[in-house]
Length: 197
Length: 197
DNA sequence: GTCTATAGCGAGATAGAC
DNA sequence: GTCTATCTCGCTATAGAC
Image 1 (cartoon, protein in one colour):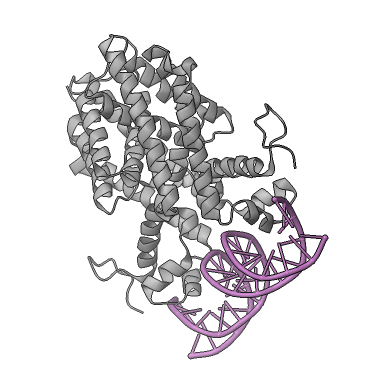
Image 2: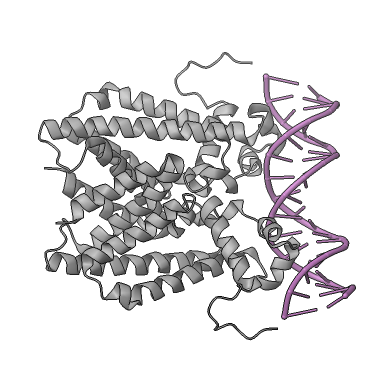
């Protein structure tokens, strides 16, 4: 079979397609409402085939979160993002959440898994904690610099504010799902109003 | 069998016990991870027995949300709550969320169901929308009065701020579950800092 | 009225065919 | 290496016993 694909945009291999489908299902229906059947049907294959690529559902779920963590780190370290001034870094993260709403009101990873957290496999819980921890640390740094340079304003410590803002964004995507997109934009509008000088 | 219990604190009847157990499971594990078995085991009865009281799981889920809606209306209209000044009404709602964290990190109804929303039975979705709509309307009113009397401060419209604050509170309970209680208190601390004059 | 026995289905997973 | 046939289990729900 083909070489290991460091190539640039060939049709994704089966493993990647499974991961993509699982991620969609996870963000759209939650961990306990998606099954190997859903993925197999889309893939034109029997459910048991997925077990070759991911022995258990736990493995698959954990792999999805682990990949999102890798993506977060990559995104955060991109010169295009890392070298931006704080206000634009803030807008950049808003934009990520905005793209979720527009993809059929997908919630974010955290919002998709938090409610079912106690039913998740332990390694998946650990990855999610790391994911949220690193994202929060990144935003705290952004807010700290923004306040120091006078480009952003807020009360309390940068890290407390970072936790609050990310929590609000995660919740905003959930509200968009239950009601409609306008609620999401209302909330992001509030955040802009309050944070931007 | 016994009279219909308008009495004041007898052991709850079976229907109520089922509702209570279902509510706990819903807030602790999510809709798709709780089963009639869990309830039946606690109750010392066979799973099928539950079907007598609630024909389908959809009925049970919907009944749980409907009851919470009734409770919200009752709470909101209590003189003890309705007659309070805005700052204390705000503290009262904070206290409700705080009691959730302390009950083994239970998330709120909205936070428990939002992620799985698309997998919920339609009547349950409708009840949840109503629940969240009425809660938001109530808080918007509280904020409006608070701003008018100078007791509370915030940017934007009362209803926009209400959506934002409730979203943040729902998210805060989820963060408490994934990480720990301190995150919840950090977020509520931020809200107090920002809203209270 | 309240609950049990049991059907019927879909889930995740194993063993082995190609 | 990749996938299919099949097992087993736990779930929701029906029919009917007490």
